[in-house]
Length: 174
Image 1 (cartoon, rainbow, N blue to C red):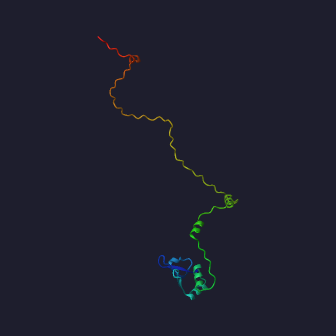
Image 2: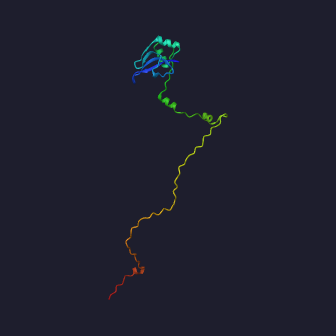
Image 3: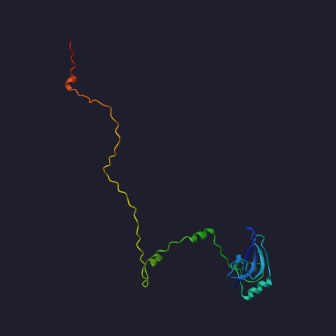
């Protein structure tokens, strides 16, 4: 099917378009088109069309894209009503992309299996539980041999009887 569509040319942020007749299956960026039938510059709003060639291609069965159709009507190349074009704002597009939660009625319909279909049971998932090291509450600790320092010869302290401490030593006088 043949389409009359815009083919972008021009530098970055300076768009300019060729109006071309091409096969619908060809991507517009490839540059494969049957015939160039006009130009359009959206910055200056200049448009130049080959009226006789556009009318010829439309009679042959080519379809104009919405934008080209509206440009052709605006420049009085063809007659008719403009096509309504709807553009999504970025905010609306982001809202539509987020999945909506189905209504309770839809949830119930999804959850109940149809009589013809067998419900698919999910395979049991084996969860590997990491081994937990158990710490004994009062486990005996292994004795670690330590080097003992040689103790200096300490004489055991002799304990004197309590009576001896209470009585002062008598001095012998001779």
